[in-house]
Length: 266
Length: 266
Image (tube, rainbow over all chains, first blue to last red; front, side, top):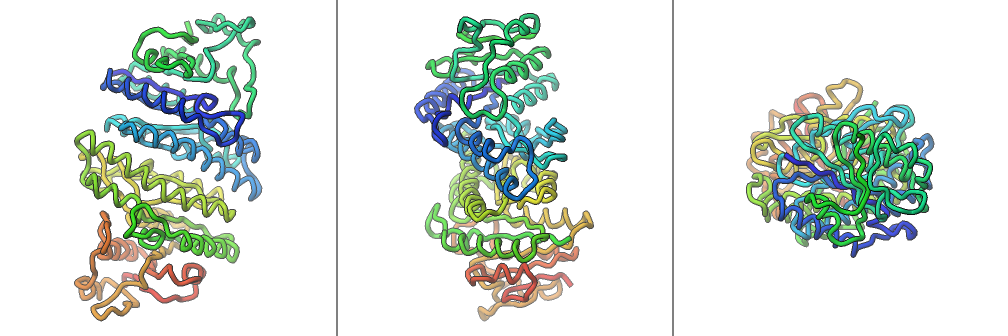
């Protein structure tokens, strides 16, 4: 069975320079592509995760939520970040439901706990049951509770990488991960898209990976590529593709090669 | 340590005769009371659960979600019910957050699984961690996945009863449950509020317990009283009180007797 994890980037589905502003026409276009994918390949299992974009990154930055909470204000901040993340996720969920796609919003805070900002344990049984029931789990970058510092932020990339690993290791699925962003792929020194990243060439590429221009509390491109390199070493292909090109997500999921960066460890 | 589980009834916080309509002035009044409770007794642990009212009961009825899903339409229905339940819960969550209360919305679908509409297993660790971190978990009546029939509805009453039992049996908490409804308590044959229900007198009261006048897929007063009688036999006092009376929730949680029905097994 095939499982594809799709990350819809925060910079793609929101205007990262305008707080709390979704790019609704882009969302509509992405939802249409997911409909097409399900129509063309009804047996394909999908998990969709969305970035926080200009929603939860704003509040997470304001309350420094990634570093935990100690006072009442930071505690309330943690809750506000959760609510901001849910707001964007719901806007997306509703677009999928209107298109007749059976998505179910499942917040990572209920599945994951950290200790000193490092993953301590996860329980993905609700994702597994949802897939078995024929639903499309919808996850997102969320706050999670932390046994040492109260709480922290768990990025969509980290969540999808954990899920990809979990389902891959069960041995039941061929797993791929597709990161749909507001960029054509990973850029090199000359601004050209790097077509392949492997463990062998990553050290030459790393110095050119920039930080996000907008508010992004979870790390930017270098962290993303490193998360993906780790899981690609198991045998999970990861693509970084441009979501602004109509049809790019669908053609990528359905197997036709597409412009972008393929991360394959070896 | 004291733990109070508060059920905010769907018929109280929504207009059950007008689909998808919240009673915002009632919600504001209830939020103010929770603020007062936390101010008067900061160490008290609270879990709040809200009924679905005229939000998710509408769609749950339309798609017969309580009995599972087999076709694509019912599967989509299951997802729409989840989203309707979340909509009302969010409206509530935002009111609490605006008042500075650190609530965190935690959907029961992620914690509970059923088999043939009977509870199979639950994992409440995220509720426990939230309480430990000083947050107020906010739950609600939700859809849950079912191993035999695909999915079903798990009521707020059932969820709160399970949580009450779970925390009571840990032995760390003195646990109470307060059901805040759109009625003065449980009524007898003459329309008078029954002040006490016990296992001994329940058989005389049962015949007079009516069904809900509006759409309610989860069972009405008899089922509620029976859920509460079961947990009260452990030693958990359950109150059914009128949420329309300003201050009634606060005085009830803070210990002053209030008009209503007390369910205490013996």
